[in-house]
Image (cartoon, rainbow, N blue to C red; front, side):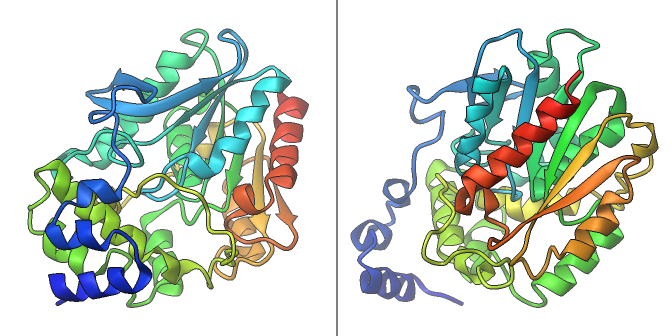
Length: 323
């Protein structure tokens, strides 16, 4: 078990907030959420408060952006705000319990809650009850977009899916077996403080989120990330990362995709050793019309490592097939 003293020694070695961590004031080591900083752009919806930003003119075709994780935030996807210059209304948001959005206990971070959240976001921003919105999803966000599309194929227009991991429980289990093996993304100190129902206060969440950020570099190699330029983020949602998958059950988000009449673009990073082009082609086959395009020289961090190339692909796809 990692002790408080060992954490303090580690932090001291890197000169990162050692005093705050050793005195237990973890809130000083992570950015504040929308509940703690009222100046942050936010939206109260679906029984929570999201950190949410919009770009462009209301009334223009809507693009909903879904970030990865579960537990990451939308900071690395901010280059997509430039789609507003192409006549789109772009919605970027931190999902329930992630980034700078409101924190929740594990029992409120369920698959049902997550589905209700994205349904509420679409309903809130769509131009009419029958309006089709475009979606751009990265990693888990591409899975999330597929989940919504499987539930509501009639509400989704053009899709851009950047390296989803899986669309079924069996596929997800296989994905994690190949990807992480016995590695634990959340780390011992998170398990000690969070999984035993201790996540009750803002500081408990701050400690868990801080600990998760310290262990995030273990995924750099397999995903082909650029170690010199880490993906930007505000704050991890450690409890979401631990709790959400356990509530999804034996899911299959492909059962209704045949009813989706739009076009899906899969974006693949050449350096990614986990989301290989073959893996992405297998997932794309679940869609009636889908194409896989590879960005050379980058990995899973394509939106921050190659923002211009990624944005060009997204823009071209949305403009080409936009009704």
